[in-house]
Image 1 (tube, one colour):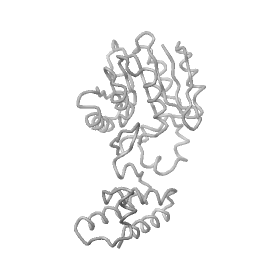
Image 2: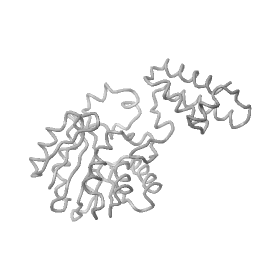
Image 3: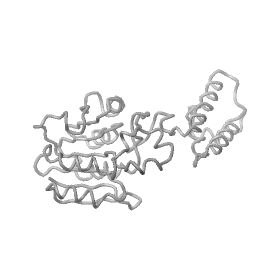
Image 4: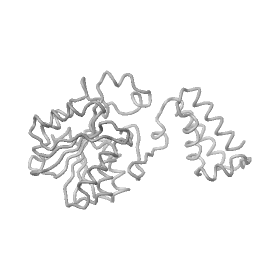
Length: 285
């Protein structure tokens, strides 16, 4: 047995399971199982593998992970890891897997506020990828991360402690603002809320609809449920001149902008992501 033969075995299994990037995923899982990198794989792929305990365990782990991926379990849940903003985040089935699209929101906040002494609220924090990235890369005075899911907050707390430092990020279990003191004020409120219409979720890939938390996906009938609540409630928790930054679906720029306008927000902008699609709506109170 060689690494190359193991790789081909994994590619074949994933291809039969209908995985679109079978070769890429099989290679990633192989490198993960054998604790190696691409350079060493290329050097060693044709060598006969040693018959030692490490190799046996690694091969067994690899085949187990390939089997899991064949069942359409997301790659990131299998490895328990996802890179976001250059940081490595722990993820599991309790949180939405961080997407590169969300980096547009983080980069915008950093561009417009980095170096300022501000208080930031991340609503619907999930894995904590936004809150932690802002705390680490923006070095803000205070970052509060809110989520309705206690299991999601466990993941966010683990990421916060490991990446930002223990107790640097305040975690609050709450249905949006319900558990926050009415007198609390923030300079920036960010959110990547559930925004996929319920009916649309049924047509998504199995990796998403069957394995990521519905709580983090479902934006109710038209996908705008949480934006209505955020637009109506954010103003009470913002300092004068405070700003909001919401991630949105590609077709939600106009309706979310309208919700903010109706609540008295100004300087409303729709920001596109790297693919040229509407991705963030931001406004000032």
